[in-house]
Length: 117
Length: 106
Image (cartoon, rainbow over all chains, first blue to last red; front, side, top):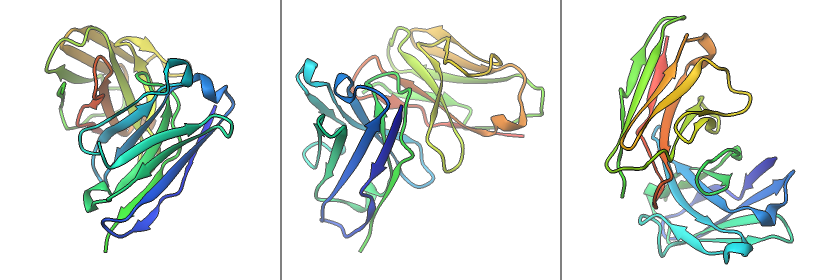
């Protein structure tokens, strides 16, 4: 199992960014995918998840990002996306994708998002 | 939201010491608790799932116990490679929440 995030970078407050998480080594469409973030020098914060299509592909989000962030998936490409809109400086951090909903057994290496003017 | 209160926030121990980290949930989470290890610049690594189950490939010096609202993570004999920050995480309810982390030093 391998998960690789991409799409991070420096972005101004109020702008948007889309992160990608490409999975391999497993049947991507069979699994829910979660996003976790970590501000510099801080702890881990759950961002949200998307269930597999078998379970409706439904999404859930942390209150801090609800309405601004959107998780989607393209199972034909083995990619989960995290669309970050209306970014704030406090969204700065490393964003990790993980497989599954509860027991987070597999993690990507993370991608750094820096929100700054 | 379920609050996870982890303590201590940091500790210093010697090689060979037994280390204990506690995690208190603000409500009953049954056994839906995991423990992760994170080394600087790396992604977290699952060590213990469902309170007390050792993840495949993880050394047996790591263990976990508890239920309901009180949980404990142990390192039986601290090794130099165990220097890291450890986090508890509940998945009983949404949003998933993590403890604040415990930084373990030698």
